[in-house]
Image 1 (cartoon, rainbow, N blue to C red):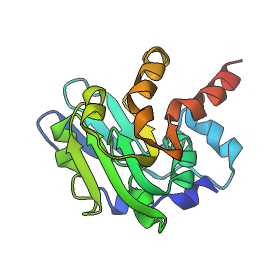
Image 2 (cartoon, rainbow, N blue to C red):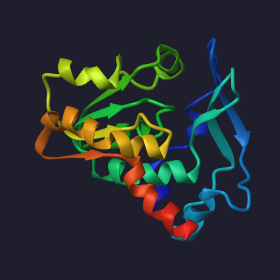
Image 3 (cartoon, rainbow, N blue to C red):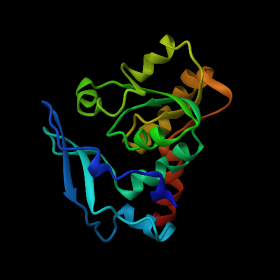
Image 4 (tube, rainbow, N blue to C red):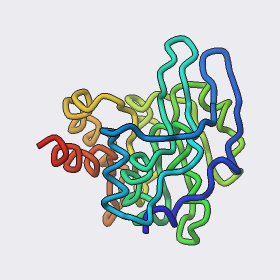
Length: 198
């Protein structure tokens, strides 16, 4: 089941803070219409975590990333299928990065993150992870390597993702190996959201 891929994040990630961001740990109880409730139906053994790890913007109070079931679910295919050399665009709180460290089929993990403060918060994951402070929209020009799996996770807005998806595929398609694959979390979760809304 999905949850077996993931570690107990509350034992790995601790509360930290920078000038503009903070990691918080809080008890999580989903509301009646919360998207996370879908995943208890999809996989009854994939239970809501008691503790939710959140990356929050101090200025706005907005939660930018968390380890809820919805987040774990839409990274599931990427984590399960990944092997060899991995490129991840967008670090977040490392929800999809940490499980890869336990896979014997992984050779290397490269993460590109634009925000230096995010890197400061999560740069102590492992020496196996190469975290690069750069812009995803231009980083492809600097690459001289091909990857077995690429995850591009730079959007929070679904509409913006749909507008920009093909453009970013063109930028990174030359850096994927012959049998490799480019992943987007939105591709996995969109059908479920649409089904719930209909």
